[in-house]
Image 1 (spheres, rainbow, N blue to C red):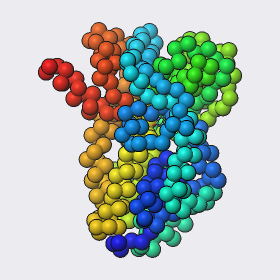
Image 2: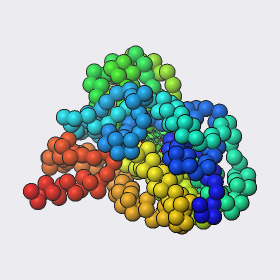
Image 3: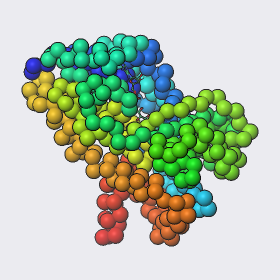
Image 4: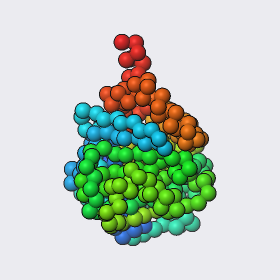
Length: 370
Ligand SMILES: Cc1cc2nc3c(=O)[nH]c(=O)nc-3n(C[C@H](O)[C@H](O)[C@H](O)COP(=O)(O)OP(=O)(O)OC[C@H]3O[C@@H](n4cnc5c(N)ncnc54)[C@H](O)[C@@H]3O)c2cc1C
């Protein structure tokens, strides 16, 4: 082993549990501190839509959490809509509570020492910094690790609000519906995710830079005809506000301290989805820590490797997000109209990729060249 003998992880979300499991399996002494007494306590604040390709590539243990399978999306603007539907299933809708419970059990079984109900305060974190410990900040967007060690800030935050409705009548229950309306949800969109024909989730995100809050925006959004017609007869069983960081921090390693997942801002700015990229980066962090322990390589390899693999794609998501966030509703209508005219709906149906814009551009050029 190199000069380190222990890894401390702060935060038992999906990213922290993933790296804890992998480190423990490799025989590296690992302790994870989670502020809540139950790792699933905060899980319902987020949705659970994950690309099937990403789930398979990352070998995510999802089967006990499967709620529904999605074949495509209907994208709505004020007066246009575009349907993108694939022959094969594209995404899973997962129960986030069950998903994280499984991740917790897997990390425990691998031998990680997990201490629940212990929130480490910002001024206590430096006590771990004894020269022999690698510190991993997996403590979400308002990361105390990032604050304690003076990491650069998260660039932008989206405010979200979501509610689950039971006893609804959602006939097309294998399609997610996305509603773009920059007068209500500037910075993201509204969504309706079917869990089944009888149960759906409705939510929205908007930029923190916009006036008002996510609950006020949500109350306007549920009056949208496409949403109201499905949920009006239903009953809300849970509702939560939360936040999504978008735009990675400019630095994610400092000496013996690494940031992963939402703490690093490794989310797709276009959708706010954080699991596929966050867990991919957790894997890059695991490899860097393993190489430090076994080969004495510097931890800065983490920053180099994750940026090499994912930074271009995350930047494309950021660029596209910036573009549509600044459009008027009329311009969104125009763009959807044009996309349909140019055949983008059938292109997305065949070659769409929920995670990688880079991959979609490649497929577009291959198609043009072919
Ligand atoms: C409304 C909404 C919908 C979303 N939908 C999707 C989706 O469909 N698909 C998708 O892929 N992603 C989605 N995301 C994003 C995704 O949920 C996050 O990217 C992901 O949960 C980040 O995981 P994480 O482990 O990095 O951080 P978190 O899940 O935030 O976990 C951080 C953990 O650290 C703990 N913690 C914090 N501070 C301390 C401390 N000082 N000491 C100890 N513990 C601490 C917290 O209690 C928490 O358990 C959504 C997010 C939101 C808000």
